[in-house]
Length: 89
Image (cartoon, rainbow, N blue to C red; front, side, top):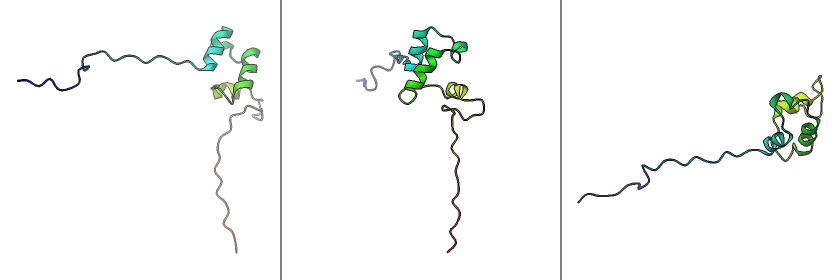
């Protein structure tokens, strides 16, 4: 007798997982924007400002909307590590 052990689904095709879109992508599609239009869209900027803490918004886009000197409210900050000075006792 031969054994029929093993995975019965070994020849079944692998099901592809659904592509999930972000809220940002849905908003872009709703506004019918192309990537070149992101920066100049007032409606997208308003949506991003209202939802940046709740939804994914590309950091490069937030940085573009910051002030030219980098002090804008959406400036992407970089983490800087500071080594504390040794205490002199």
